[in-house]
Image 1 (cartoon, helix red, strand yellow):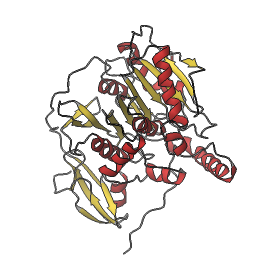
Image 2 (cartoon, one colour):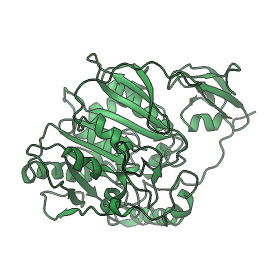
Image 3 (cartoon, one colour):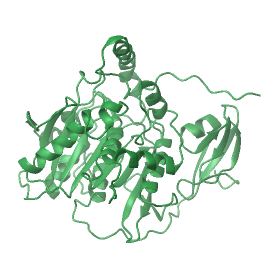
Image 4 (cartoon, helix red, strand yellow):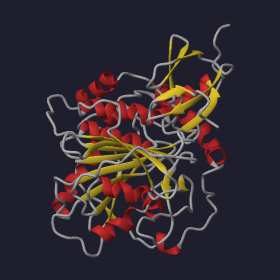
Length: 433
């Protein structure tokens, strides 16, 4: 029987659509963007996604951003805003924050929780913002070569924002980080690859590896079902972004929801493969643990000194968005008053910690493997591949990590896969419920 791939509608959220190009191509892209935009609101509402009508706590919306109208060369046509704590020390660190599609700098500031930790630990937050002139859905153009190369387009504009921050606010050039959601997460990958000499670390939330998409069509494939390449191939894409750079390479934290239907969870595995290979590490974690109130599964890939240079955080039970945990506790942050901010775990707390901005300077101690039962999933081969638990080659499907043959790439063959350790899947032997 030939394998069958179910037809899929264009994914909601639509990072790819939009272009500054004119002519027939530009009109085609704008039409595609308009169609997807119509579906965005309804398609992204559902389990694990906050309703846009929910009211956010007043204190989460009190922060005023400072608009920077002139920050130097701006070939990407972006807007720059900053959040400056009242007590910003000299030589302060900085975090560049990149919003997701349909969002704005203010929305990301109001809901992500980053400002909470900027106040607590004394760092500047630079919010870059794109517009509908660049992209009909206000997505960063992470897939357009004219915006993703060193010295060009949106990437160059973001770099210029960092340069301006160092002179205007006294930012320490050795402690600049970048993070973002969805299209902003994919653009975070761009900045880490194109400017590894500028960013000490990055955190990619529901994002995509650098070098995956180069146009609208390929970008949708990167989002879902995702693209499977070897770690060496992914790493080469990063090295080609800044030829001759000898390091040190940025540290990278990866965050992804298990139930993300917009950017397939397998992208977390491909990002892991990309950055562990860049750092010369294997793809088997050195430490695994659970963190936060929802038992997010963390896999760490440490360097020789024990400090994690790559980590993957798999958030259970959530779809596409930034994990937040509204409240006033030490590990809480954010608000859920608009789409794509999901009540789960305060990712900004853990990202700030990964960046070393909370005063933590020593490596995390080794953690014993979690004692809770191994995670298990029962699904057809198509869904296993889409979720990143398996790969497909020549119409056949193989479990990720173990390489076990699962049969044809279709919706009819079903298996229960067990994950143990993180990122290593085998056909369950009866130990799963």
